[in-house]
Length: 226
Image (cartoon, rainbow, N blue to C red):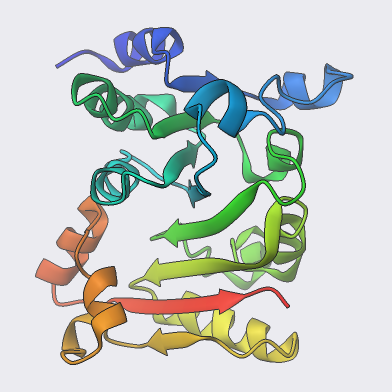
């Protein structure tokens, strides 16, 4: 297995991996070179683009890409040594509908154009449970407003977490914004007769498997930013 530094180096050379960091966001006068061009110049199709924010090792991104070949998937994370695994897997398995970007959520409005993204998955993010870190939660109103800059009108956001505090916070935030979830559950794997939730259960991240094995209930919420 390569070292962390070797993974950093290899990730930069993968043709399905990109980097857009602080210096690019602050100093560039132009957006990211694939801004509004992902379908035309990278995926070479007009299929919907789905983001996974905080994708970690990328197993959810490549899992979705394998299952849904007529959709495009992009994993976002700040640590490329994590995404190295997903990017490498995608290349080795010739998954042409997958990309990874080392960047921060705050920079995505210069990576993606308005209406360029169809759906967002937020899978097991850091819950930032301290009250002082509330603004860093990926379902804080400032992030939800940020997603509107590139998410299609009525685009879907999916959330998976094992953390009660973060999940309750998300539901309360949506309520305060007059957003009614399309679907939610406090225990995904106790839901047996819901076809849509069975589909959601069909792919697991590393942390989802770990938390489930430890007895944590997995929460899921699906909503739109009206």
